[in-house]
Amino acid sequence: MKNKSPLPSIIGCLVIQLCVGILYLWSVFRRDFPAVYALPPDSTIPGMITSYMLFAFVVGNFIGGFINDKKGPQFTAIIGVILFAAGVGSTGLLTKDSVGLIVLTYCVTGGLGSGIAYGACISCVQKWLPHRRGLASGLAVSAFGFSTVVFAPVANWLIGAFTKVDAATGAATANFSPVFFILAGVFFVFGIAACFFVRLPDAGYLASLPKPAANTKVVSSARDYTLAQAAKTVPFWCIFLYIFFINGTWNLTSPLIATLGEQERGLTNALAVFAVSFTGVTNSAGRLIMAAVSDRIGRVAASVVLCGVTLVGAVLMTFIAGIPYIITVAVIAFAYGGPSAINAAVSTDFFGPKNSGTNYGVVMMGLGVSSVFFNMISNTILKKNPVPTFIMGGVTAVLAALCMLVISRYLARVKRGESI
Image 1 (cartoon, rainbow, N blue to C red):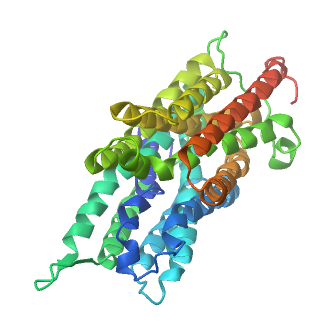
Image 2 (image 1 turned 180 degrees about the vertical axis):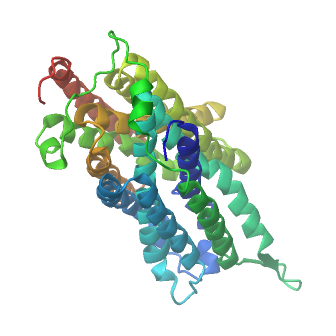
């Protein structure tokens, strides 16, 4: 079968991304989770679910990269969707006695599946749009980020639908099991159906694409690096460290948004909840907009701009209140979303598209390490104290910018067609 139109495959990848992109949906369950499963007040399970799942997601990227480069995106995406749906669905089987297994079901199985499908979809869309690689990455990761915006209200409605109110006491008790079952079923049906549209382009399609302008600021390597070759270069580890640091600010900020806004920055409960929800919109916008911008001004320039925006946002978060607080949080979320698309494009620019799944899967490990590391720092050393937390967030943004500036030195070599 000849694959000459990008639309079926791209739309299929975007639908898959919507299905597996619920890494941050846990906030919908977190409030009622301790009561539903009778957890003690000092339980660490609810607070660490997102971090554990994010780490598994990054490992899934790593594993999926090898599978994708050997078996192709369709096979890889199918494995990812099945694992993801199995993880979410099996979470519905947990009881008060077995709730500790949520780390294995929701976090590990669901996170691995999400990461495997995510990497396959990004790689596939990039190969359909090699002349607009930033836009391709932006489309894929913005759909992933927008998943929370779509499914958070759905999950919230389902929780309400399966909540029973005791007529005598008026106490409300939620039942999470059918919610997990229904969500898993939806993700499985739509995700698997979308997988059958995922294919790679043929040679004829690629030959028909317009050639990049000679004066483009986006420089791509003419060589395809294996993982072993890429790992011996400075840009590889600079990209890894950039991902580690630039995600640090958001990892420090995210847990504080609602509580800090309501308790210290003058927000009502409704506005605090809105601030959290609105970050999903601006996060997705950052993924799409900045990826397209990077095609015009270059990956390094776009990345440094996002570091600057993040730094300003972190400084403002040490004191700002009211509606400006919501705006600042939204801007930080925008700047957090942007690198998610640019990183994939930077990796492919430097190391070529042939082994992009594997190479990007490894540098993405910086995201998983960042999530666990900065979450531990926030909870143990900083004790979620806002001023030192956001100062550290600003420092991480500066360090991320320095990594990108080092990378810029190697672009000259790529321009000259040299090895890096």
